[in-house]
Amino acid sequence: MLVAALAAGALVLAALPWPQAHGLSALTLAIVLGIAVGNTVYPRIAHPTAPGVAFCKHWLLRAGIVLYGLRLTFQDIGQVGMAGVAIDALVLTSTFALAWWAGTRVLGMDREAALLIGAGSAICGAAAVMAAEPVVRARPAQVTVAVSTVVVFGTVAMVLYPALYQLNLAVGALSFSEQLYGVFTGSTVHEVAQVVAAGGAVSAAAADTAVITKMVRVMMLAPFLVGLSLLLARQRPTARDGGSHRVVVPWFAFGFVAVAAVNSLQVLPPVLVTAALQVDTVLLAMAMAALGLTTQVRALRQAGLKPLLLALLLFAWLLVGGLAITLGVHALLR
Image (cartoon, rainbow, N blue to C red):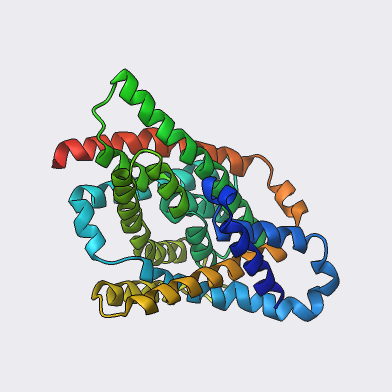
């Protein structure tokens, strides 16, 4: 009931004009409310409510990721073409590889924190961070820090991208159509809500292309989680009994793909899909609120500047490297 109340508050706030104009989704607001309550009231009632909070963090998150597949169809791939798919794949892999290398080798961060920030920047923001958490086996504070970086730099991108597009129109430095801008935005901006805002600031056509490109990028979440699980299993040290650590199989990722496949057949009534998407938003908001409840501010302070520096580096790569990838692939495959 506590988590549901926080999620309901986040949903109400997310429907207001100011949060919508600034790309603040219900998920972002839910974790903020969770942190606020978690560091004030929650410690006094933690004992009786802990099992429910843990249930929301574990099971409701996985159910929410599965239902997230209803936002996608395989037909989306056809609308952006091979160029859009190639751009998404290159941006995803290069961004995540940079996060892993720079976070652990250059900044000396915990691998779990670096991977979560990389997942959020490379794929779909807070939802990707939450989906990667059970595979990476991160602590709640690390998840919260990763989500926070997504919010900060995704918001910056939402404002900066349209401004740079208009500047380019005035200067004429690059041949950049509205459709190409949409592909660039969808393949590099963090959150879906931020993609909608950044694309819509240019035109409706740019927003449509941006959202479709973003959905294809989101569809890559499932194979990404499976690949990451296999990779981490190989790198983890040998267990004491001489055997290797087991692979963390993200079964919810397969459920995500299955739901997207069913949705692609267009056999589900639109009313049912709409209702299921609303339920999905509630489930994910509850999972985020539960995460916030178990995150202490002192843990965020202990994280220091390194996560912010890594997120800044990834943002710069998404802007500059993502632009280079978009223009390069477009020139090769057009």
